[in-house]
Image (cartoon, rainbow, N blue to C red):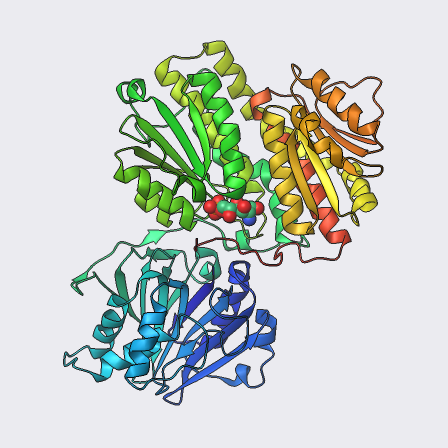
Length: 612
Ligand code: AGP
């Protein structure tokens, strides 16, 4: 949940580190720090709060070091404070460490080190790491490369997840990194090398990346990167060229990343569709080679994910069951992994994760693999942990998503899942060609329809102005519109801090209607012609109890008395979420702006949840 950056080369390290941290603030923003080696001494500067507070420390701009590590924190162990901020250093001031992840056995390790005479100044789990490195460096290691061996011995003692960077004034040109279950990439430059939790943080410096594997070490100097496996045998590693333009991680004139990402959706959907879909041709999913024999043998599909990705899975379930007739369950990853689901080799498990680093989703994937199921990952991040674990991977190609609230990743996940359902139906011959062609044409029309939705935003802005100071809201829908209601409600909670609930409209009478009182806001989503009359009746029930209503629809509504109606283009009901979610994304955005909140970095949340 934290962001780490590293640099070793021929330039001043501090500006590179600070720029990288600014790009990674979405991973954590309660404190930030850097360590560099200045005049052969470790120099650590850190501060509570945002990276801006770190930048303001007097003297930070005067540091001339060309090597350094940096961190932006999302607190797990120990409150946000200067002493708990990273880098953490050992008692002798010789080893500085930044860490993303959780050391589960840090109590034990602290006790061990305390007995050996070490003391601790923070409440973090991380502080054991530099002290363990120091301990092993002093004790019994006689090899030539004592630094790497000491880091490896310390890491061998750790239980949990970690991406770690270490520097030492004893080796002033060397940066050592290692990871397990937390992301870390190395950017290769000319006479300089970079490290980061995520590619975008260093994309302005290089497009050549090494994606570090679990339990793999790298020893990095300005003109070299050496890789070692868990037994410290050296091996070579191929560079991956990342074709993203550096501007994809800039705001490009938008006030916030979230707004930029909402407006990117016509293009991100084009990228997701890519060359997979053409009218009159079979969907192209050659990259996962799922055979008819295998599919005929499948008895059930699980779609497992967290948060927004899980909501995308709900739409995917509708598409797969409708087109392929395979029973499909959607599970929250943190529930799935502990509820002993029935999994065997006749089960296909699909895992959705924008970041590809979500701890619960990865654990749920490992569980299914251990029981013989085939696993398919859907992710937005190339080489992310989930893609390395899964049997098959599909990328959404939505481009980097920086805002904590997921928008374009959701719509891309939905499109990809529907295309996957079409593909499976084509392999199984389980749906009429006409039906599939109609759906393909609806998907191909989406970018233009999204542009139309994004051109008409006045009504949403006005509604947001009217209701932004409220405390509770309700989202109602039936069928696929209920899936969208859930996602709309999550978005609102996340960035506007307004309590909201999503209900299947038909459930209203079974309890929630007791909460509807004069003036409360209810948002209805009505896109399915078969269900529209029923949903209208449910909404009339709340109107007659004094609710203010916003309705998002692609249907012709006659004689209704809803306060605001937002019309969206008509489309196949399976793909309607991609259009109906957009006004809800914008509604949350404008409510948050009206409240004067930080849209991109909502309180208590981080972009990727790498802890349970
Ligand atoms: C989305 O707006 C949320 N920030 C959150 O629910 C997110 O979708 C969830 O944490 C899963 O993340 P992932 O897709 O990276 O696995």
